[in-house]
Image (cartoon, rainbow, N blue to C red; front, side):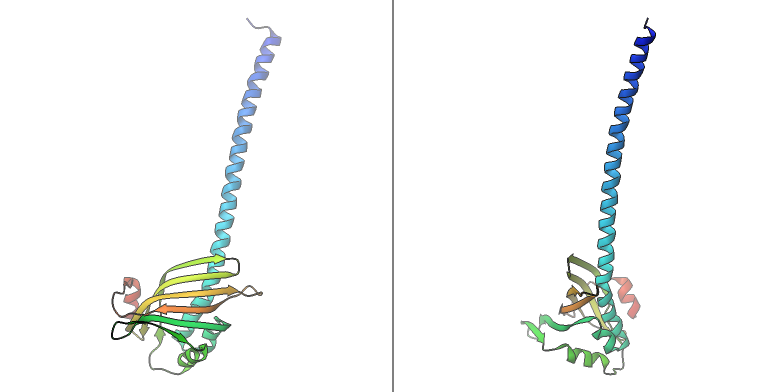
Length: 189
């Protein structure tokens, strides 16, 4: 049989062990919580920044649809390069560089009988500091009539006021082999 002193030593040892185990569990729990909180903050911050990168891209297409060249112009930086990559009628590859954005803005703002609609999907955005790149599949419709499809590739930079602006836009164009999602093509039936 244990004396009361021995019993107290056993009880104290038991509680020390339990306390150490609980302390280890709490340390691990705290570490996991801190890790999840940090990961969530980074993800939320990246998500927020990706939404900000999308704003000028979405404004560009909204302006095209509305025939509003001022809205389109607001999506771009002061100095812009544009290029189209495709194949000519003989099947030869080409790259056509636009000399300025002015011709594009003029075409958007000049009244045309049908609205220009360019829905995009599968948008992939990469960001490194004040530089972003967006890659998206698209289909171009004049009114409800399909014209062409391809990929839009945007390069954007973040201005000192925090706004993202497009400084380079390149696209591919083809009339066949387009994998347009049903929900997109259904909008133009």
